[in-house]
Length: 155
Image (spheres, rainbow, N blue to C red):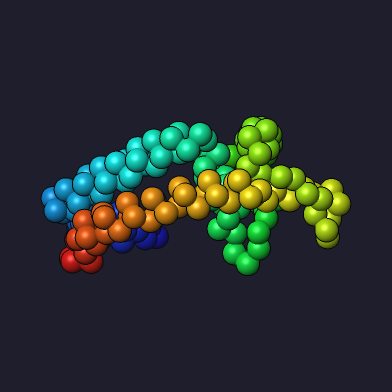
């Protein structure tokens, strides 16, 4: 006896196509505008980092350390996870930031095999300056982002 798979019937295939194509023209327009706003913000962020004398990745590393929940340092492995980079790439970023006097390495007090990266006084000043202008930029685009995100709440 052969049993039919109900998922392979023509009616179920049509229903599946309808479920898959729930993206409306308004959704496409909102996605495109949202991506454009993100690109503009990233371009702003890259220019701000360069203006502060650091690369965008170095800025992101310092922000990750400063924004570490409940602490003032991160291990190289944690930074690699947060930046979606390889360990050796983060080591190079830390080397360059250390040469600039923006970060320092300290032994992990609980695991001597690990190194904790923290910001120096100069690093804190740099990330404070960058974060202040980033928050202001986000405030300026907040109404646009809210409008775009509301598009996805409507069905």
